[in-house]
Image (cartoon, rainbow, N blue to C red; front, side):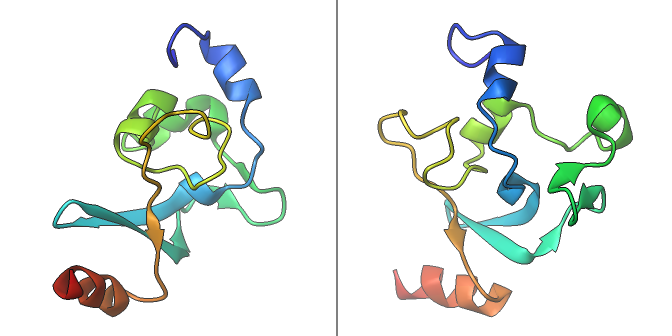
Length: 106
């Protein structure tokens, strides 16, 4: 559940953008999304998970909504997080090198 919402209501909030299916890396407390790398079960044509109903069995590292919030998986504007004060979305980078340069700079 997200707060006091049921799982089905929380899933109704999903706009099916697929951006939470991109791989992420965490470096020095910052989360970076790698837009060129997505879950193997993500269908580019439908923007949906091909194994959605069994996703936690097929891919145990798939996140629940609450885990996605805690791990900063959702982009800015995602309905799951748009009203959460202090939520910091992942930073989208074009390369791992760009992510490393970002954390080195700060």
